[in-house]
Length: 527
Image (cartoon, rainbow, N blue to C red; front, top):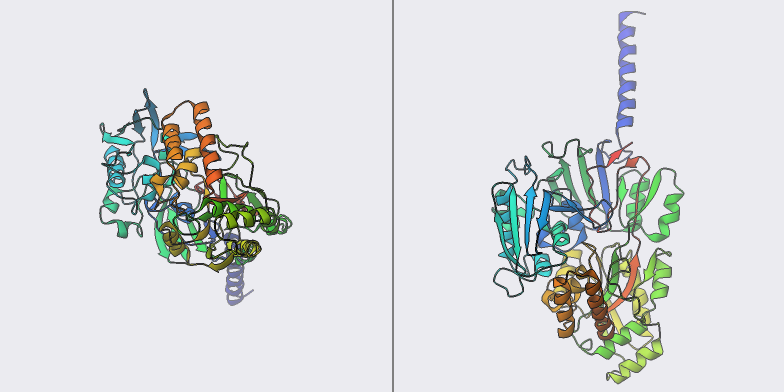
């Protein structure tokens, strides 16, 4: 063989090898390599500052950018070490946290006790509009009578002391929640609005880019303090609002992991040798909220009529494919304190009509029914469920006009009490009854997480007593009494407790879905 032919053969062999190597290193159709995960989800984040929001699409990203003082267990809400390696309390009022050493923020500054103090001071000096979840979990802000935190101080570089005004039973679980992640003071001191688009934490990944309503990209933080993690180089969160389109992207290899899978598609995924179906442990509730400050929902009989009018069984059979249970309480049965003795509202249109007549609406009324614009774990297809509810209400003479908005606008307007009735839900953030009942339905949280604007003095007293009570049996009884009041007053129509589904490429490994919906992706890799 002459030299020219030898060079041609060598070049051809090189091209073939390059093609083979490229094929082995890429996710089919995704434009990414085997060290990049493309995560398809139903909606965009509303912020990348977790302390400013209450919605799960933000936490899906930020749990990988930031870390909290304490963590939850891999698939439960048991309290584990986080940025604090040790903690103790003698009286339930003073907590001492020993911090991890040698930890850096993504901007190169040191994580230390002063940074923790500055984060707590930032939250405590805010307001309900800026930090709604802080308000919900800690009873207000600095100077407020109900604010449970007396002081947060540094004792040297690696010890933080938090003093409470009164015992708070779920305190340790509260500070393990995603929204109380510790951020770089250097970053947030540049301004809250700038910071929520340029997040800086200590997590396994650091922020790269946010294309609104399209994608968020994060990449491996090389100086991450937990050696050997993360295993991926990059993660791209892609917003694909339609469930079917998201699944098609997964089947085509354009994404590697898909959240918000329609229950009806479960069998299809299980029958596909290239995919795997993943179930998230259930800790949620989907509901129809009734804004009690807006007539006619200011009348209890009307709210009770709504509960009798809606056929929950049909909704679950039609849209959840048996992967949900009918809800009768505002929290799931897996939460300690659930009141199983409560008799659910049955589907009874005639009873609903009687109650409407009693309330002064024998011919029904007109209303707006707000349908969620994005799939959520507790409600896989809000628009179609709204159509069933609309039909049910028509049967009792209620004309419901279905309306919707983009997700951030929907949440903002509903939180301001602008909806007659709105579809929403909640995935528990710490596994405690307080995180469902007090957060979503107490007067302290009107304008933050209590979108119905419901208030009841007797119930409020039960919640505050339950927060202070450290005897778990006594707490359970208090929460059971509160659920009796909620059932009678009916600010919600509880609909379903679902088992959320995800799907992934077959070669994806190390993904462990968390019941809170905030999935840490540092152990994820491809086989």
